[in-house]
Structures are given as structure tokens and as C-alpha cells.
Length: 284
Ligand code: AMP
Image 1 (tube, rainbow, N blue to C red):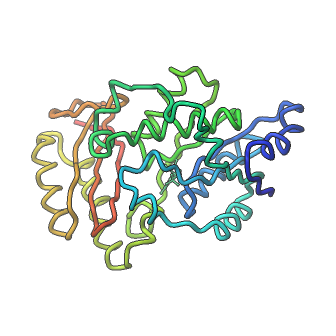
Image 2: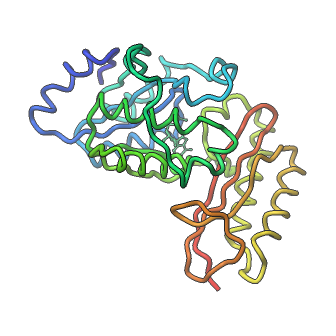
């Protein structure tokens, strides 16, 4: 595995693979890696010939600079994990190559369907920052496929639509969420939670499952109100809990047999903001 810093070093390292027409798999991360990231690398490894993982804490997708500063940075451990997972190249881009001073700060793009919902509402500007970094890294790496976690389902949908609209010829692949034994979705932010807090936060996943398994005779509203009570009783503070359709994420109030839905949730455990979701099909 090679660790390369900067775009020129990346291009030199990738040249022979590009010349030989090898397929390239791309995994974008902000570091502080865990088992959830490793499944992205493993899937990329199975489906492509050269796996490039980036580590870049992207300032434009944070709403608060304190959150950006507090974001865990564990590069030495990250590269060890990536080596074990079979990654070929760790790419650590330079700040001024992702954000060149002579270019507009953000990629010009709007998504009227997805930017105004859920994460887009609670974290204004977040998805503009995500689209910017992903598109710029696509242009650095020119991957065949790019792998994104379905833990961040809205992000996955945003990136799929943005890469189509902006005509980047990259296959965007979603990878199922990895969880701790208690059900809590793995996240770099969990490093800031105690064991007891993690256990309490696993209520999010139980509530999502309850909503998925609820009888179709009950309205989604009743399910959501119950779920909010349970999450709050465990000591979390809710941003949102809702049920919506796919792929547009429109909130729904009635179930329809055979239709696919997604239950989405964001809540704070102390100062740590957690998100999760569950995709399910309602049977009548
Ligand atoms: P991050 O470093 O948090 O930006 O995440 C990098 C990638 O890993 C994103 O595509 C995430 O959706 C994905 N990811 C993070 N946690 C998980 C998880 N628990 N299961 C699956 N994918 C994940």
C-alpha cells in the first residue's frame, strides 16, 4: 500500500494502472476509521482492481468550526487499518488542491429535491460542501466506481444525483450500514461517547426497527410520536424522526403495501450528533 500526499504524487502513482486500463475503486473518508469504513474498502477491493481511499477532513461540510476542529484525527492508525483491509493507495490531498484559491470555493450545484430535507435543513450548506469535495476528488482520481455508506443515505442519494447531473462517469455504489453489537451504527463520532452513552444511543436503531415492523393499520404519525418519546426517555435530544419515500425522501403519512420506505433519524447524545436510517418494505 502506498500513502501519497498531493495530486502530482497521486497521478504518478496511478499512471501505470490508468495506462493499463485497470478499474479504480474510490472510498472517500474523513479518517478516524472504523469497521464501517473497512467494508467500503473490502467491497471496492472485490469489484475493482485498484482501491484508492482518501483521508480528508472537509471543512466546507461542517456547520460549526468547533465541530471541524474537534473531529478526531488518527492518521497513523487509519493507514494501518487500510493496509489490513487491502487498500492499494491512501490519498491525502492538499487543502489548496481541493480548494484552489483561483476557483470558486464551492462547485455550482443545487438539488431542489434533496437539499431542503432532513440533513439539508438541519445542516445548512452541508451538502454543498459534500458535493464539492466529492466532485473534486472524482476529478483527481477518475474512479470507475465510488463507494458510499448507506448510513448516510441522503448523502448517497445526493452524490448519485450530483454525479449524474454534473456528468461524472462514475458508478456510485451504496454499502450497507455496519453496526455495533447493541445496534448503534458505527461512526467516527462514537469515539466521543462513553460505553453507557453508546448503549443508550442504540435506542435509535430499536425505534427504527419498531417503525419498520409496525402494523400498517397504525399511522406513521403515531409511530413517530412513540419513537420520539422513547428516544427522549433514553436521554437523547431529537433533531428529526420521520418516515419517507425513496428516492425523493418525501415525508409519508399512509403506508402502501409492497412499497419501499425509509425511516430516518438524527439525535444528539450529549454534544454528539448521531444519524441513522432503516429501509423497509411495508407488507399489509
Ligand atoms: P466519513 O469518514 O464519516 O465521512 O465516512 C466515510 C464513508 O464511510 C461514508 O460513505 C460513510 O457513509 C461511510 N460510513 C461511515 N460509517 C459507516 C457505517 N457504520 N457503515 C457503513 N458505512 C459507513
